[in-house]
Image 1: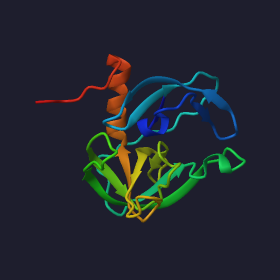
Image 2: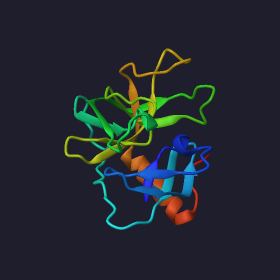
Image 3: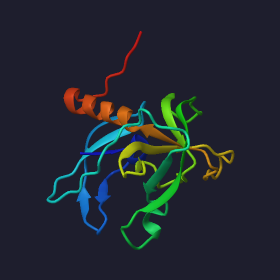
Length: 178
């Protein structure tokens, strides 16, 4: 099972996951939650790596954070990811939607680790290498050509795991309502 962002796979005709070392896998979409910006995928193979998952609860402002992704996409000729480092800038940030967004983002992790287009869907990890979030959004004043300005956001691992569990158990995300 692989967790990524819904906005990364939306509209894709084919989804491939490349592991460090170059192995490619075709991914099947198990389910998505556009509101939480989470997609749950499944790949089948032998000797698949498993990333340790930590918790976003109790994160401290100033704690180290490392964003892993592929900001250059297919422009780089190898399969190794890019890492950027920073700190946790804030926790529990709520982000109002822009005109193209589906909904509000609640409880986000804010970091100054560079999350650029292509890093979305990758993990945000703590200094122990545990996944604490899913890289998701950036804030940019240049809407025509957005880029990193020191304000990035990740979906907390706890939110991503709950969404994944809902999709695996119920076949769809479960949201509260009044």
